[in-house]
Image (cartoon, one colour):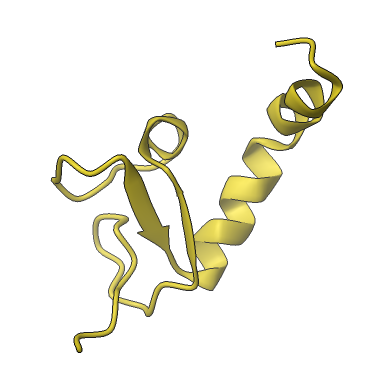
Length: 64
């Protein structure tokens, strides 16, 4: 089976996490595809977490 790679344009590192495409599109320039999920490498996942921290906190509290 082929190992998944990061879906961010220009990144060929192995993927470690999967996130919702709509949220990731707000932050990254993604490779084409029609899937609802995208794969991110360790570095891009860390960046994703930092940039969506406030939004995720509000979702947890039920304010969004």
